[in-house]
Length: 272
Image 1 (spheres, helix red, strand yellow):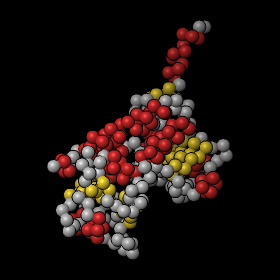
Image 2: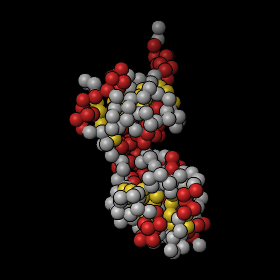
Image 3: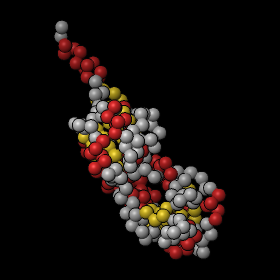
Image 4: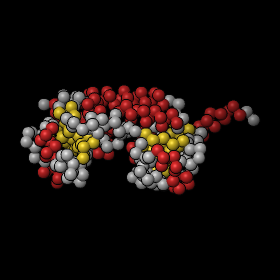
């Protein structure tokens, strides 16, 4: 039998097409993802078929493996993973304890900058054996920086707020959203480096107090619709409130590209 005739067919049998249309190896590594933002990054890389377990906070239909603070070692071991990706919120000694022998485990950041988002993609793709990972990360960098620059926030002063109700918090200079909006030519007026929680007992106890202190021109709120609490924002100076879909912004992952697309639809609110 001339096996050379069947080599192209045999090659195809070892390939799958990912949801992004990219070819990946069928025998891809078994991956456990301990945080939704890491799952979204793996999906963008076309590695969703490789994911065998996810955190309890994920919407992807896979067996649950606890959370970043309390990973379920028994559940993880039962899934026989080859790779575990979690955030650096998992204590190093705990991650070591729940990692089965021979499994490669990584605690990733991503919360401080867009560069870290790119580093996560690079690491995950490399560990999963994606031969073209350098090109994919370079393309992602080119796309998000180009789209962000095209938005042109005209140097408007902004405050980036998680929500109006519950326990809202604002994003400081050393957070990925501040980096993203700075690239879009906005100025984040938050003086905190990372996250400022707005609640009783904190340095700033109300949204109005924070807004009146920092005096932003635009308030971006990362929830789909303004809830009743937003109506209680009464700034001393003129302020425009813009609601954005948190699912597109609150994950330091390539889903931020969708967020930039949504942000661009509001351009008229700061371009006049």
